Length: 242
Image (cartoon, rainbow, N blue to C red; front, side, top):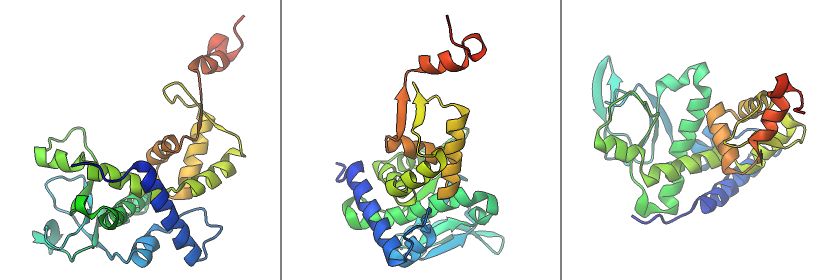
């Protein structure tokens, strides 16, 4: 099926929605998106938590169409449950304090399914959000769903909602003292850059890897030849080569 939207269009749409949401909530100076409030109050999507019992243990989120069932645990038994249409179902394991980053991204992902269902309804359907496990054997149907165009667009929309450009730039400037974020060929990063990225990720309530990916998407790195890094850090223990 043809892709009926673009990443640039998704960027513009989602950023406009987040700006409107934050304006309505008077979050003018906020450094982080209240993603649960955005999904439940602005989009009107209920969020429920369940213990998933799906054949793919990586499945941690689901956006219901009111027809497709989900395997969950009820009274210590596996049961198939059909949730109401346009309900975000989140695996209860993400309620642990150390899972805040994955929880927020999963909520954003399910909210993004709703946004795309309104923006390009012809390409929308019930879908799971999964963490890919390189050691697991997936069925063709599982792989097709995980790697589909719809999931790629939904992941991008989730990142846009959780890490809109204006908030990423605001936090990055704060933690880098306004200095450019330097990356060398192949996105080799010095420790100080990684620490800035981690601080920015913490401020936005996300994990390091999605933050790094988002910075690449937004073209916020000052890319330089790796020879500069070798010259400054490795030749003769970090001294200049003569």
